[in-house]
Image (tube, rainbow, N blue to C red):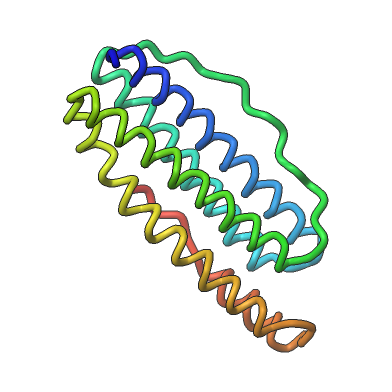
Length: 166
């Protein structure tokens, strides 16, 4: 396995992170249409985080002398059944991102590319947090069910989230 293969995987990850940003922005738009601005805020912040992740991969690839080749980012879905479906899709997507990062870690280790493996450790830890947060939000949205007062409180809770560049 050569270094070019690792560069290809890193370029693919940039596109996956950019897709995640688009997916979360689409989810944010759905919540805005439902007048749930707090939950929309949560997904807007999530979108910004994913863009920041793509930039970390972009910068790292540049730092190690890899050729940056931006790839096409497919259109995310925009029609959703309900809030629960959205949170479940968010968790499902985070699991795909986790697998992708793990695959790159394995490839880097197999290739003896220890700098890339070390770089990816931050993302491994981040994905543990992302999946835990998504699971917790699914539990909360299930508690809300069709209770407007509970949904209002949940919306207010997620309105407090702010983007913090890492």
